[in-house]
Amino acid sequence: NAGVTQTPKFRVLKTGQSMTLLCAQDMNHEYMYWYRQDPGMGLRLIHYSVGEGTTAKGEVPDGYNVSRLKKQNFLLGLESAAPSQTSVYFCASSGRTVCYFGPGTRLLVL
Amino acid sequence: AQSVTQLDSQVPVFEEAPVELRCNYSSSVSVYLFWYVQYPNQGLQLLLKYLSGSTLVKGINGFEAEFNKSQTSFHLRKPSVHISDTAEYFCAVSDLEGGSEKLVFGKGTKLTVNP
Image (tube, rainbow over all chains, first blue to last red; front, side, top):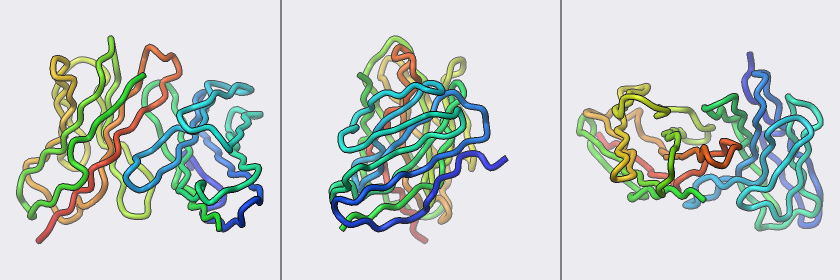
C-alpha cells in the first residue's frame, strides 16, 4: 500500500513550457486535491475532484488544468509555465474525513 | 468560505518546555478540524483530528488539541517538547457544508526547539 505518490519529484522548466504532474492513490478514495505551497502562504487549493470524471476549481486555479480520467489518478497540467508557478505541489486524497498527502513535487520555472 | 488563522508564524522554545500553537477558524455550523506537521523537505503528516465528541483530542508524538466552539479555536499543545519536534505545523478546517470536504489551511507555524 503506497498511499499517495507523485511524479516527478523535481522539475525545472523554462517560461512557456508545458508539463503534467501525476498523482496516484491506491486507497480507493473518491476525493483528490492539488495544492501548492509557497513560503508564508500555507497550502492553497488549486483544483479538486469529488469523483472520476469530475473536477472543480479551488482557490488559485488560474494557469492550471486538471483531469481525473481514472479514479486512482489525478493529473495537474501547466500549459504555459510562468515563474509565478515556481512552488512545491502536493497532491492529496480523501475517503471521508482525513486527507492523505503525497511527498510533493518541487517545480522551478526559470 | 472558511478561513483559518494561525496566530504565530514562528515559535521558538527550549527543549522540555511546554508549547501552545494557536489556531482560530471562521465560524460555521459544523466543521472538522485538523493539525498537520511537516518536517523539513517532507510532505504533510496528520498529527490529530477533531470530528465530533470529546473536545480534547490526543494525537501522535504527545500532542493534543482542544476544540473550543465558542472561541472558534483549536489550539495545539504539548507539555514537553523535544528537539525532534522542530517542524512546521498547519491547522486546517474542512467545510462540511461545502460538500466536497476540501481542506482550508492556515499559513503555518514554524516551531523551533532549541537545546
